[in-house]
Length: 268
Image 1 (cartoon, one colour):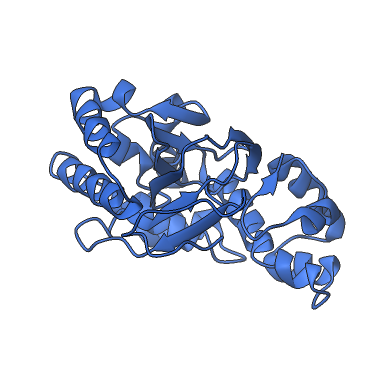
Image 2 (cartoon, one colour; image 1 turned 90 degrees about the vertical axis):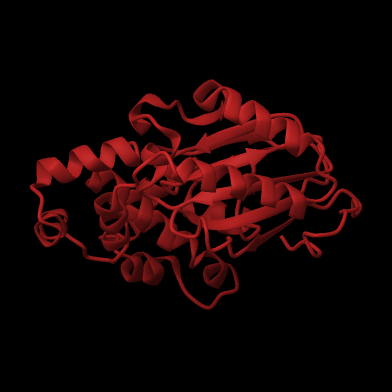
């Protein structure tokens, strides 16, 4: 998931608007939080507008200049309004750690943005006050990473769910075999996944397979691969199967998605 937009200048310096163009940059998180944070990111908004954000099973902690929020989507496409802030910053939590880090079952968290102050009260308000005083995305990233590092002192991350999410990324992975390899029953695996991701393993597999397709959209757009070939390569039964899943998870047909693809999200 991303609510940003292309490539940013160094995150340690102030950002300047570039003729309304949105840009986006990911970077490696600090060692203290790398176990639960997949990437840190910063975005230059450009102009206020709606985006479609596609599911990935992750949770993003997003500072938009006014509110620090946990943004999540795993069951389907999310309509997200880019703010009018000069820049935004966030941390993307790894798929499989959301429930532990946020402190509640992910099935109880509504899709979209939930103010973190509703979950962490004083700790989140203190972080918002510090973020409001940040002059650069790099400063904001430091505040966010410190917040997560402090959080990790008080919570225990379920390594089983994290390992299961990694295993389910592989094309052809079977939930019964993943459960057996991790030493739990399929029912136990489903309980862990629902708590930490928000859906069971089979539903997460659908999302991860769709993410594999998104990774090949650019090749289709450049004429280097056909939709039928990509559908087969990433694990769909056929192109019709890809079409049904694409509409369900993105709100668009594969062809429309290829035509509107910008490299991460598409205009709503």
